[in-house]
Image (cartoon, rainbow, N blue to C red; front, side, top):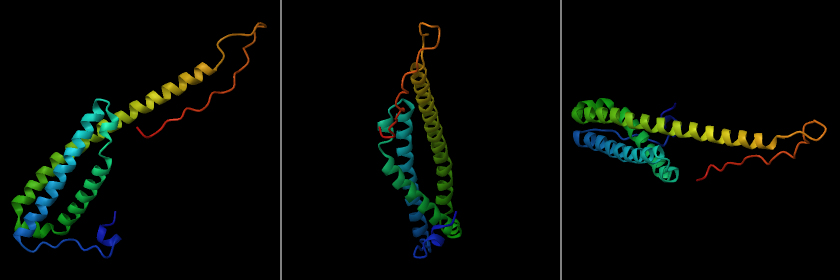
Length: 161
């Protein structure tokens, strides 16, 4: 994947030149990560108990925070040497927080994958049952299978909740 600066020549990442700027950059990334983690935990909690509408209600906020977090990480990478020089303690805290955040993301992905698998299984089961009900269950008087009915309409599923 290309860094933002290669995709957009007008993009110039923040350049850290002193301790205050280094701490400010790390604090901003930490705030964004904490906000995103909060949204992910709420989503995970709702989806885990089957409240899909509530769980997915913060999609726009999650996307916004994810983009800001990625942008912040790009700035941290671009300033890794300066951060290590000016704010090594803050950089260590960011690394620890990032590990914890990774566990939250992993839990969220597991819950979403499980919900998706369960939903697919339910939809397939319903479609199979509808197809089974459309097949003849009896024989005609001459011992032949009863005439087939017109096929049922296809099963439509809305992705909106």
